[in-house]
Image (cartoon, rainbow, N blue to C red; front, side, top):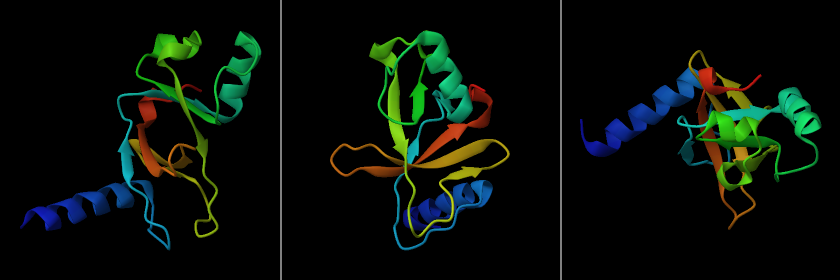
Length: 122
């Protein structure tokens, strides 16, 4: 098997795991499996506890769980969850990994960002 075929096969394994099917738009995969992550109601609760908006976006992540929970802005990143007309949903949950379509609002970058389920803050 050549290099390109291995790449396609590995990418398809990721897609199959999270239940993602490519459509009109093709998104590069962003491996964020080293990060802790939070969104939705859990993020709203954290914002209420810490006070104010200390990020941009509705998906927040960090390599450090402590920095994320303590709002250490120097080590927290965020993206907007992308709602795309060609995809019925933006969040794809597999047994071990979750893929989220995101818009970074930086240079037009949009990704399928992959996180480990065990690192989600709920």
